[in-house]
Length: 437
Image (cartoon, rainbow, N blue to C red; front, side, top):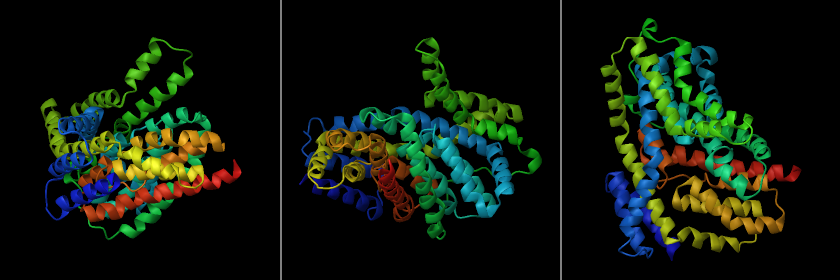
């Protein structure tokens, strides 16, 4: 019965937004309250679930998205994104620009959280789109596929890293297997799948793309590249340096503090304010105006993501994820497939890849120990399942939809199917590896 209520709630949400033309944030609030009551959450605590979901979702994420949007806006307004896109197009040519963006996304996606990578790289994608008059979804999806795969498959991202610990896997071996599985998943879900999306109409947020400037007014390539990728460089350093320092101590604590995505982006904003702002002849007032405009561009996106967090929390508090998982535990299928399936179902119901992966881990762990499955492969299987069919209850779905300014239909056709392909190819790669390891 609870599963039917969840499905009805998701359908109601889609109807409110598409047919009713209701603002997505308002639709999320209505559906969260209605579904929560139908699922049996007490009347006195249903609003607490909504508040908690909004608060937990917007906690760190709001800082990351706002600071990332500020940096992205400055990179665009200063001409740095135009300089980078021009050099990339000259190096790879229009024919291979997708592959260049895909490789870039994969490299920066290993150390970078998905939301940080998204808001940092989308302005670059849009600059290429507007400068060369290319279809936005066709060009952008390969890079976002790379970011998504690294988020779901590879340590040190939160869910894979936590799964390594829960399954007693080996971090290095999981990373090696993960890259082996991730490469075909990214290629199929990125450049190959996006060929079917050339006719998807998209008018991305022009607020994140500055008007074209003459070459002599653009910052240098070194300044543009280093400032744009500074968060990536800092995060890589703060990830690798603790591995080289023995034991514990104040230096590791300092690196852990500096390695927080919010702190890294704050440092990057401070440096970019000079290198791409004051250092290029802008006044502090002009730079701050750019930052204010960036916040206006993403204000509704934050609210929509908050609404998705409220619905996710209602599903969690109702216990529906455990109910679904208990039913699936009885199915006579291979443990690797079962781990993938449990994570996939929870992901579809709850929206959060991290929650889906960690919830599935607790359910599949006893079965995994009894069947002697390779724990490294189980990490990847659950990680792949946690990316299955992102839709209206997932913040990533709304990030993609709002930034690329798509209809829900086209977002499902592009983003949701891309995530589904990643999940299916990931499972296939895990099962192939299982033959050999």
